[in-house]
Image 1 (tube, rainbow, N blue to C red):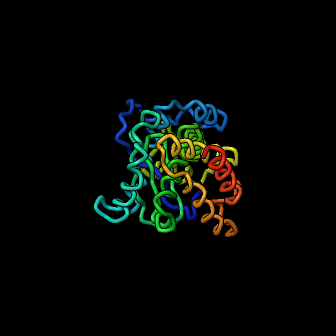
Image 2 (cartoon, rainbow, N blue to C red; image 1 turned 90 degrees about the horizontal axis):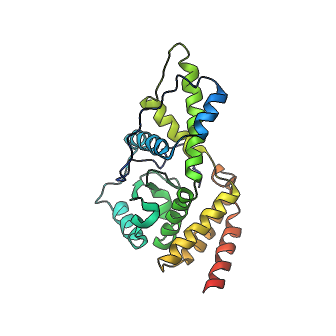
Image 3 (cartoon, rainbow, N blue to C red; image 1 turned 120 degrees about the vertical axis):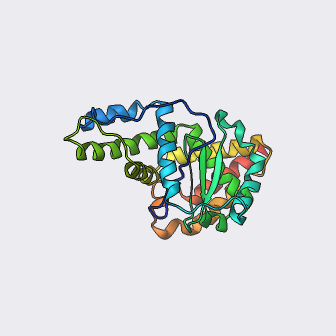
Length: 252
């Protein structure tokens, strides 16, 4: 899903053990062709490293619901039935950003951020459906591609500004900007539908209600006509609800 405002991305260091990765040196990538090659060839470990570092910076800039708060406790309770440690071998870490945006994100380092505005709008079945959708983007490789795109954009700007140096690494500010570019990147309609189906599969496997994946889109349909970029690349919410309902009717 996209973002309602240009606020902090869903990025935070996970409890997942990551391979040690050296800081990415931008000195050798001062032209767009080299940057495109580097971005396209970022390894899984490098993508996780970028996510960990940019998440840490973005989390420092934003208000996260405290562990004992109503938002944190509700999210933990809603997601417990998902048994998330099973997904792709990653221990997922979910927290709430105390912002009014109706949004959520997941990253390759295993972290999930759900915005308070979305939680205020959704019931627990719908929140599980949203998180399943975001996990789907990770499992399908969509999130990695978005990070590669964000990296190429951020690295190009940084390298251009550091033309007089022989090497440049991403600063804290750059990492924050990288996160912003990640959340501004949009998934295609095909990717969104595939992530919907992944969420359906996750809920089905865990024998959880899939109806929340239908009512979620029915609620989002009320925002579809806002002209907001959150929906500009998405299939229409009514179509998505109908697609999932058809699967429920078929599978029982």
